[in-house]
Image (cartoon, rainbow, N blue to C red; front, side, top):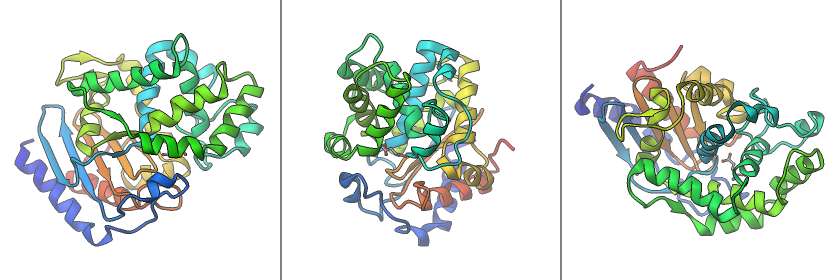
Length: 309
Ligand code: GLU
């Protein structure tokens, strides 16, 4: 595909949803996120052969929030492989991202790595033989190595705001610790988790950093294997089934691609063997997924005819 036709797809999809920009509600349970301009909208596509297209605020860094769980999952799978599934399941949750109820019924084993409880276990595993600082640095190094420049970092204002209001996440870690599913201190686990959720990246950076998932774990631009084909397939299937919390079914129905959203309003979708699409619009729907971002991805998938179904 040429840059011109990619631009055409992205342009007509984004224009078709333009009157929706500004809808939804910004996440306000993390005070620093409540200040983001709801009218922001960005989108980017990057293909395996390096063609790209961008729209709107595609270069502006935003808080990636739960999208960061794809990176921590990749690192943890590289660290301990399928042993992860002894501590976290890989089933859709059908519950809110920060639900406590299901965790108690299932004795401290989170449903999947993308709900908060599951991602907190990932942070605990990343802390093995590392301090909180070196764990966070490991994630940043991973991203900066793929991007090829040292410019991805943490938005410290968001991280602080998140740590100060992490009451629910703290309950989840305490509960899992009581079930022997957390090895480190509660504060170290929260520190790693809140900091990686506060990484700031643009749509263009996100598309670049997840290109390996469109090519079975191999990054075609830097010619590096990031993860084995088998584990890359696992990440994509978890994105397909669990990437949007209790609206994962709705996202699969509307978009038909593996994806991961964050309460900062970003969504990344993987088009296997083609490339990556990232959208950003801070207004969320009631499930905590970007409202306009989902519509934009639905329009892009429809116009391009990219889907895995
Ligand atoms: N850091 C957010 C939290 O723990 C992540 C939620 C999200 O993006 O879905 O609540």
